[in-house]
Length: 377
Image (cartoon, rainbow, N blue to C red; front, side, top):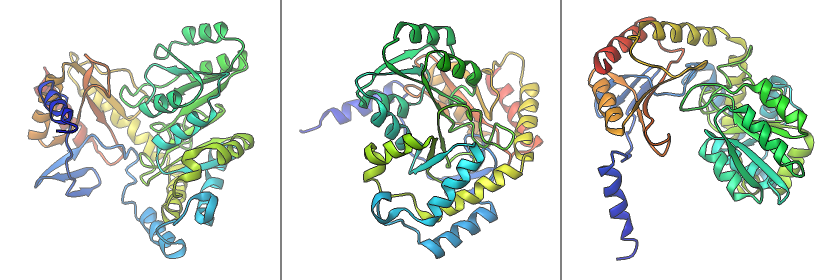
């Protein structure tokens, strides 16, 4: 039989407690989800600011569809680039204080698009060890030399820069690391780049909306910023913010941008509204901080949280089966908390990844902490 490896591979995943399967969300209402007829408080969502189903964003989506249509119906370089896209790009530039922005259909495609196009034979990519899979894939698809430095180890990053003096260098990291919840030291990151005539690239998928005075993230001093709309901003797609010359280059040489149908103009119009709300409603970020402090204080002292400055709170349980068991026990108590296992995280670091969002309240946090204390202690 052709492709008979498929059955064996799936069986191995199951035996190693690494099997993945889809769960259909039958209903989604703020902090609650319904799956297979059961209702849960959702602590696995990336809707950090609680903007999903916001009436103004929904209204903008409908208005966008009525004005521009639901589909762009073409790539940006044919007839797919609409006023809605241009208006969204302008809003991003004002928000992040960047000269240019360009839109993509996902963060994965944005990272791949830039890194696969920018890496030439004389280019050196220096990636944080915990960089997202899309960053790694984009780097490896390019003609650049790719090296990885230990997570947030800026001494090693500086040494790598000193060792490779005759290459164009791009230093690559993330604003908030999606599985640990910790942040880059962006000032140190940028200073190292400046001292070695290098450029910086920061993936802000999990920091835009949540960090920064107006939710603009922490990478405004980086040369290239990538962020998504599908997390804190609650719509869909992604963007790159950069200078004029890089945008001009990517428009001409990025295969993702040239050949992909452009983002829905209706979604672009909704995303512009989401940015306006994110900028003006700082109380949403303040609430995440307050709830996160409450969560840490209510957990039993024997439960160790990874250090975090974000919405993401990780409890490392090491073994895959232990993480799966804890997740199932939480579901039995009415909490949806996903077990994260390899290859998403390194072997031996399986965990519960808990996301605290503006839609939660004090009682949700207290009850989750109480249940975790029962399940894990």
